[in-house]
Length: 329
Image 1: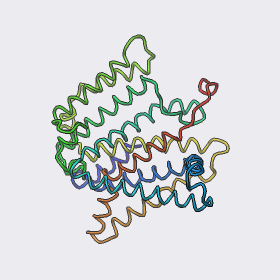
Image 2: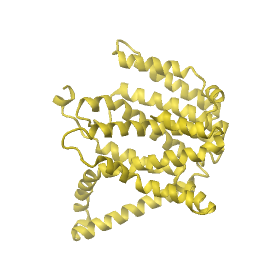
Image 3: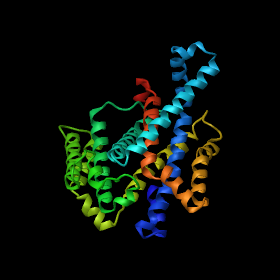
């Protein structure tokens, strides 16, 4: 599914420079819908936790609606302040976007590794795993994706749209000052080490297969792969993001078949994409200067990664623990 969406864009726009804005606007519109859906899905849990905290704070002495309104206003102001600081800091420290890209990629990998357990237990994701094998696999996959993204960004730093304001070397290794060749070697070594860790001792077949995959994938030079396939950073970003989104579209479709699920799931999915779709339409309809400014402010990787960090934190906190008797059902 992810490959089909990206392939359709690549087929229509064979030139990576022409394809990049279409990729970002299409994929990030879908991505923002995912973020909005995740926030709405966990709104009850968020309201309950924050309600308890407000009650125990000085705001608890105020009437409930006033206290909740003030808390929400303060929260929005704090987020706006952080976002302003983040965007202002990107020119000097593009590494900030690189760190957020690493967190978002890890989130996608960890979620994917948790899906089999979710399918065995009522389509509910378990809490973020503390299992060493799971985290090694997630970190190995993250290293491979970041290595490929860094290689593509080094070939075309402009295509990163703000991720490489100080040049690809500042971003590529997630470590300030690391050269691109050192960064790619570090990513490959991290993936190989993760694969070897999964291959240690006597292991179950799925873990062994994943370990072998990481070891073999680490042997491929991402710079060579990008050169052979003409992959741009936008392509790597799109495929990684779309894979995560598609897995949740499938999971949502499965949940719609479960008794007591929402009867209006299709309408809800369309609704969470309404605001992002409106932003996309505005970016195309507004005069060129204003439309480009809107796209740069929201429909490009660097700002999207900031909002995705909130999504990672919120979803990690909302994932419920599965009772032992259900876990082994």
